[in-house]
Image 1 (cartoon, rainbow, N blue to C red):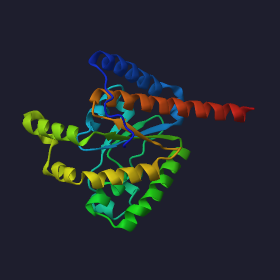
Image 2 (image 1 turned 90 degrees about the horizontal axis):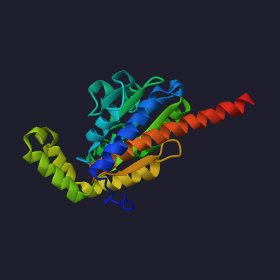
Image 3 (image 1 turned 30 degrees about the vertical axis):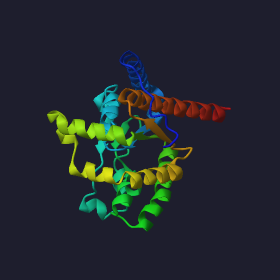
Image 4 (image 1 turned 135 degrees about the vertical axis):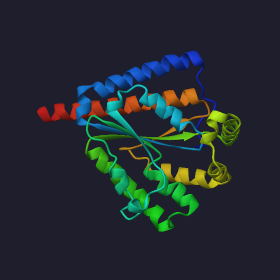
Length: 245
């Protein structure tokens, strides 16, 4: 996180041009016949008020509603608590040719559950290995996994919190819990660094997004998804050519 250049930004004209380009690219990739051999999963995590919802909205705007679903992750229900931890996420994995966007995800165990004490240290320590195995199984089944941490600095978060309280139609976005989480900024930062160190793999690397500028973040998210899908197509094409020989 310390290596991120949080001054990255796009002016309005550049943003509009690049956004349309990347949205058109994603639309084409999702219709590509090679997508029938893959599914796509995008995981969105990040600081409170980092702009996850806005980024997800721009991704979804490029697609036919029949192609994707958005899964918001909240606290588990009693039924979900009775199952192994990853059960409720397995159930949401898309079929081939489809795209599922997770607004928060299975990483809750090593983030909010760790910091807030909702699980034991043994639980969240074990979760790193469980998550890596889970994502490897997804990859082996042809699922493209793209993971984003949207990062903002503490001053930007405070500014956005205050805007949300001041603007009536944004007030629903801010809760007492957001202010409580802010008091644990350093604990969450440490948890994020551990998460990235332990779960950024060749199969499913983390993409850290400089999100102080929302325009920059939205374009980076779309471009990363597109690059990941194209890389998966190329890898499959090479594999097929090799086996035809």
